[in-house]
Length: 371
Image (tube, rainbow, N blue to C red; front, side):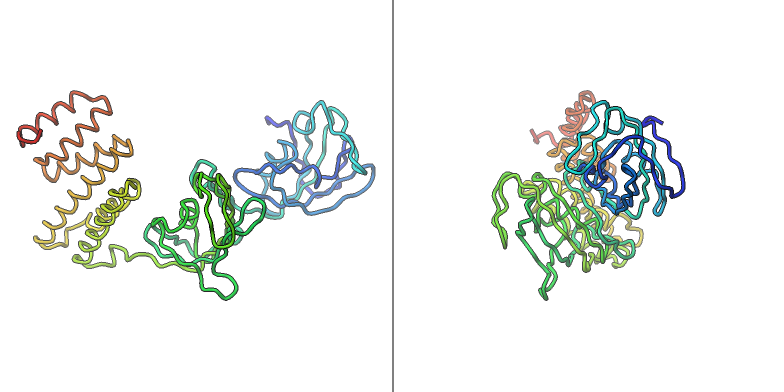
């Protein structure tokens, strides 16, 4: 194994090859990316026994982080750690009544994994991290447009509370997902939570208040601040699903989502607009039970939503998806000039100039005055 460590099963007192500082002092605050672990450690230093329980939010040597990830809850192991994955050729100097670690020391550490907390990377770029403190119920989570009720406390890095809602007999804080009613990082994190879940969310400035100072209820959030929220999901009410709607309700819901998309597009919020157009199209995706009149209404809506979504994708530089959306429109209406022009724009960006030329010529044949 790369880390040159061996694991001996069973709870035995560990013998250190060389003196070792108390483990609690050695734990460096380097966060593991996947979990926070709670360990019981049993050490022997100069014949003196140490027993304790430590929250291991990081590791004091690479070997420990690697080993913990292979353990099950309640498992007890004895680790033998070679110098290059302990304190190396420099060792560690004594401090106070804590012993020194000589150079090139091989360490033996007895560990018991008591528990762990799941830590998830909400945005997949390590800028919104969510640690579950209490698991939620069931499997359902909010969608875009869901109204959620939460308790929350927002803190700065120094512990200053800048917002507190839903506590001390105050009703839960209510907001609608994906409506810019809270900062983006909190919005995205809450969307991953189940009813009854309690989580600690750490949000970097890019998904928090950014480069602007922001006056909140209890304190000012300075520029470029990383913020921390403790959030409890009390309940949420999802929008009515399409399978619970009759045909006319589906058409009305699609129109409503399309109008929401138009509003976000005008505001320059192309990602949010795109999601609205996608949701609108899903309401009327299956129209076999529609009347002839409803099928015609559905077709008009599908064309409009896909064309508008293609415009969003062009703005977002997602040219491949823009091309696919325009092609779907042309399957419904082969004479649609807007679809031909937008697909040609996508082809140009994809450096498929021959296909772009074909679409432009075809569009001009259909509408020669549109120049």
